Image 1 (cartoon, rainbow over the protein chains, first blue to last red):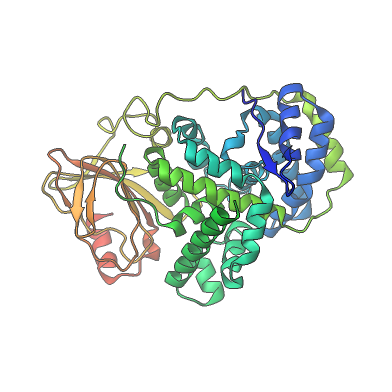
Image 2: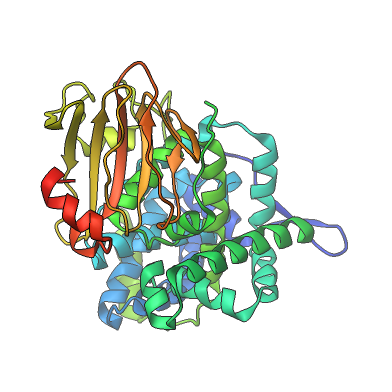
Length: 196
Length: 220
């Protein structure tokens, strides 16, 4: 059981636990329904939007929202703050459900490797990860990369388009899609290093 | 374990975003089981996904959905905290994600299909609706790797032994994630046979002339 709560440092140097982490830990330890309802209101409308971007109808999207949030309830104790924020964890749950239900493909290629992380005990990496938990960092970094790179990230993560289909849609060579992806990713990593 | 050859950042993003085909996704997962660096990179890329999720416009969720979700909680049993596996590899010496996929058999117990002198393959079944292809190849010492899937996106992960080509030497856990236009002719340089996991696009998507000619002959 993880008792450590990640902290973000405010402008005046005060240290505050991140609200969604606190709520999730209340769900994990006390089966706290109020905390769960607050998480539902925070994340469900985004997850619905995410599902509809892949072409799900509102009705199917809500079924998947329900399933995503029930997974949050049942797996709350498995959340590991040093891997990333609550939004990242919920993103991976929603991504896997989307692959399983909307694409009908296997998700063990994600779930079967989740167990490995705890073995590598690289404190430097854990530090970088806990800095990333604060969504604001990533959002600010995202705002700073060129539009064409941000578009590619949205088409990948949100629209679920394979890189070959992005190339077709934007009428650019696959190699260009890949090199812009690499640039976006490196730029983001660099920005995150300087921001944090 | 020291890993010399890693995943391309574009592949890390595709895996984290969930857009890789099944075969390529399993090849990535297999490499991740060996490689701390790439696992860290995937976590960072997943953080991007979390942030992009939060930037989505909110779509109002109906009260029916909300109350149905809350009402169903009592019936849900909670997962207990993960008991971590002692090692990334299963008892049979290959990553658990791959071991589960081939019905928990060891590499030596698989029903290998002989494809030629010193060359055998094993097809790994995937979901019926996906258009990628995953197989294990076993190539004898000193032999050349056959052409496979050129013209399409291809990932190779070494599970046993090693091979070399002009891009370097590939040992256990290394991944070859090369641009499609790179010509290479790998030769097995280990004393034992080299066993690789190879993800390719479905044969209909092969563009290269030679791949189309050779594919029906050697069947890979």
